[in-house]
View 1: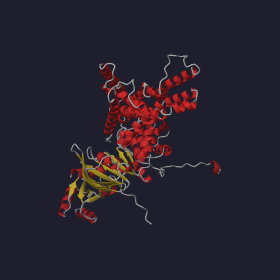
View 2 (view 1 turned 90 degrees about the vertical axis):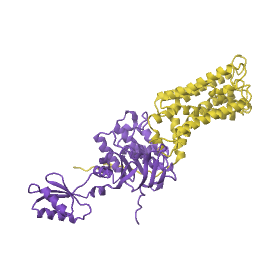
View 3 (view 1 turned 30 degrees about the vertical axis):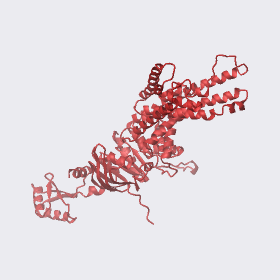
View 4 (view 1 turned 90 degrees about the horizontal axis):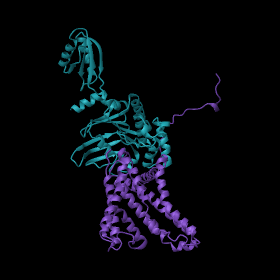
Length: 313
Length: 301
């Protein structure tokens, strides 16, 4: 018997949202995102907040279709929220209440009975690392403690999906590490995470997939490992005589391989469209030219490279 | 090294994360929870003692007249003419005459809605299974519930007290059976009206103090304007008394108790005064609710 796979986190087809004032926030977004930890990346105005609003059923799309965690949002836009958690970027906590009361309150508002909500609040505040402080008013909390409280209220009702908007915003390096550790653990608890952020390092660290949008359009979506592996570049480091890089580049050009000198010893060879045999070709060519081969490696990109390259297209 | 016996060794458990598999409600439960939490906040429960002082003091103030009435009734039960100038008030007069209820609304209605907007809690609330209509119903319902309680409880004290000091408790009960429905109905209509106006005005601002002043200001301005225009009409009532927004539910109260506008009303003697009172009541109530539904129809994340 096969274990049941969780439904995709997000499926959208032709999703379009045009506001009454005429601004189009999403323009025919079509994307299929599996359950797990997913980074939602885009500049300001890319459409991230609009996508969140649509996923929470707070407004209806102008056109297109949206399914979140296996449920069509249009069919029950309010009911689906009982299984969603949301952590906004901005301050959103009642400052005169204790963390314990706030988290229990939002548990009740998600439909949990009062006693269960209070028990769950205690559990998730433990998980978030707020021990004794939970009984103090949030108004006296540091930014990091407030962020933890916000995350705890998003988790209190055991959501199948949490939408996190810039969870590390305003945190110091230690607080950021702690928050990312916590977010990184959520998928292991069976909670899918959609992490909206400008910080691509955060996405690279805790997410399996990434969705990049720009001005309402999908830039790219896919597994992060795959995006960073498929660079199509080979870094070759050679020496042995002056002008070694230039000689190798010229020889490669004759074989139809495009190469670009990085410095006096390194050059990048565009290997896209070639199989692994291209490594042997380069190695043999270095030998034919009587050069010394110091290293030869696939160049790994960061998400920043991927984003900048795709956004430039 | 000696091993500790098993009974003395402890174990450290990483409880990790435990999924929730219990009951999970929807809109109705969420709305009920918001109502309950708002009632708790308005009464100062689970808050500092300073937040408790005002509501409970007002409850005491609204109850004092009933206690005095019953006390005097008890003191002169053998000689009704012992205090010849003492005027016992009727159940009708006791509905809505206390400004304590208005003060309570002016204090608590802004307290239950203004912080939600000022501290940007609304996006979190609306990320739960709640709609703007649910939010309005919960908030207005919470204030109305407390105003009803504070308005009704003194009547219970008055009724039970009068019954006990009367010559025959059963006779008193049968003679005054009508008030058993007239009081709750009229107090409920008053509570709903005060709550809707109070929450609607408070929803227009992020600042509690501004909301409270707006509520009291409405009462003061409309009653003053109505007094000026009706005084010009002489001793007779004037249809313009309908401008006195806070007197409208008292007109409705009169209809519940008497079937017509009472002699102490500004609409007394006006043709169709009852219809004016009910019409004005409905217009104000529905306008307040419409304003609220509009204010909370959509919330930015």
